[in-house]
Amino acid sequence: MNEALPDVPEVRVVGLPQLTSGFDLVDRLDLPMHLKVHGPLEPMGGEQLAQLAERINLKGRGGAGFPFHKKLRSVAESAIKRGIRPVVVVNGSEDEPACRKDTVLINRAPHLILDGALLCAEALGARTLVVGVTRESTQRSMEAALAERGLNNGRRSALRARVQRNPVRMVTGAAASLIRSIDGGPAVPPGRKVSASQNGVGGAPTLLSNAETFAQLAIAARIGPERYGNTGLYDEPGTVMLTVSGAVARPMVIEVPTGVPLRYVLQLAGAPPVPQGVLTGGYHGKWIDAATVNEAIVSRNSLDAVGGALGAGAILPITQDTCPLGESLRVAQWLAEESAGQCGPCYLGLPAAARGLEDILNGGGPAALEAVKQVAKNVKRRGACSHPDGSAMFLESTIKAFTDDLAAHVLGNGCGRPVEGVLPLFEGGRAPTGIPGGGESEENGASRQKIYVDWTLCRGHGLCADILPEVFQLGADGFPTVAQAQVPRYAEAKALRAVRRCPALALRLEEDTRSQGAPSSRNLPVLSQGRGRRALGR
Image (cartoon, rainbow, N blue to C red; front, side):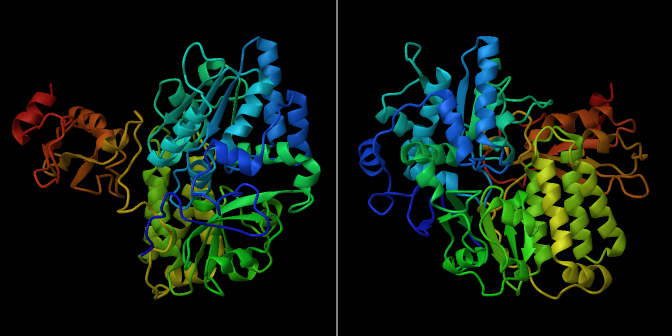
């Protein structure tokens, strides 16, 4: 079973280091060491900075790959048009179990990231800088870096700078989630999609990009576009930070020039010579097979061309000895649990897709396969963030990449291989974390409440499934498919509402006396079976 990755795994470099310069000297480059390694950095005008980003074809390194120069110009134009000072936000949220490259940069080279962010703030005339993180280690490192530069959030500061710490959740990394949390709301996407460049933090135009993107900009500003372009491919110059894990002997973060063969990167990490498949781009990415690995090089365009994805830079091979559908099921279940719980196609569709994949593994036949395809299709482009789209892409890629195994499970008795758990998830697993309130970790687990169905009263009205889909689904007969279930803590209020609104008074909530740990002060009222139904039926 693969263990969770540490915040800062082993770091390697192919060729000359750029982002990882100085890593061989110290564990963390404080400001004096940063300046010794990289040298000083002169300010640049806004258009000059945009031209630099355009010449090196800098794209966001957080997964979406949006051209940075377009984002920079859009923020500048909006700020000038509206007469509002813009805001600069560094997105250092990295909450996917298979990604650590931004966490490594924040922990070991925080000033390189701040260099790029401060360049943009100066060029745009911004007076606010926020760095979003989710881990204790990244919070400590970035707060120390701000202090080393004399930056703080004081009202009299020329530039107000601070760190925004959010819960470790997949949806926290969405730009809209981070902006919402900076404004004091929950770290989940709002119900409508808004361009941060036009209307971001506090309603101001906001330049928001990934931590590695700002670090790459700082490198290019120092060495110039010509020298920067001497590394890597002509159309995608520079280096890329990758996190390589899965079935490897040495999980690592590695800086490589674009154009390096993917198989070479896998060899450095000790991957199998002939992997059964490689998941590219992380858990919102795509699978490629062993034959395709030999064709692929490390670049966004190359991976797209062979059916893979660079995404957030996660590369995960699996061996020939594990069931690829079983491995993917573990990830699909985790993705379902990471829903923010506020968009129906996401918090209903993703669990349904995971159950469908499980049905395939359990011999559900062609009907189960068609059901998964339909659910994956239905969730796309219907959420408040990219989580349902990325999850659907992962599911569709799984079905497409492992056709032989799929046939063995759909048409036969399965592939006969065990599930080794080589794709990293958070240690000890994760309880459902779809918390509309976006609270801290104590909000993420199961409550001490269980909900029960009294079959002598249930008449199959189905309201429970409408109100509490996290717990109840209806079977072909129209009745709930479970008789009792633990209530996720974030769904406590909905569980109480389901009990109150059941037309047949067939539901009840009781405290689960077998739950471990101290009693929670947030428990729902404990309802006895008789009095509870009468009281709630009023």
